[in-house]
Image (cartoon, rainbow, N blue to C red; front, side, top):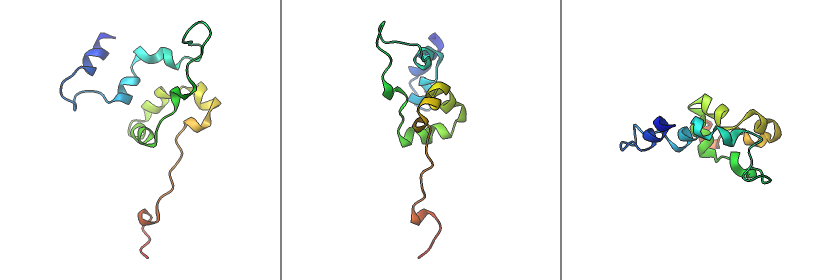
Length: 97
C-alpha cells in the first residue's frame, strides 16, 4: 500500500493518479466487497457506487477502471450504476439546418 500512497503524494499532477484511478487501488478493495460493514450492523452507503456523467466519461477512457470501481454484484443489483449512453444533441449529430 505504501507505493500507492507515495504516488498520491507526487508533486507533478501529470504524474499523479486521478481520484478515480486512486480509488482502483487494492487499498480500497474492501469497499467493493458486498459483505463489508461500517460497524457490526450497518452496511456501506447505497450511494457508494453512484458516479457522475463526468466520472463515467473518465472511466470510458480506461475500460478496466469501470470493472474495478463497480463490482459485479452492484451492476447486477443496480443496473443504473452502469453508464447510460447520452443522446447526441442536434448540433452534434451533423444535421445542418
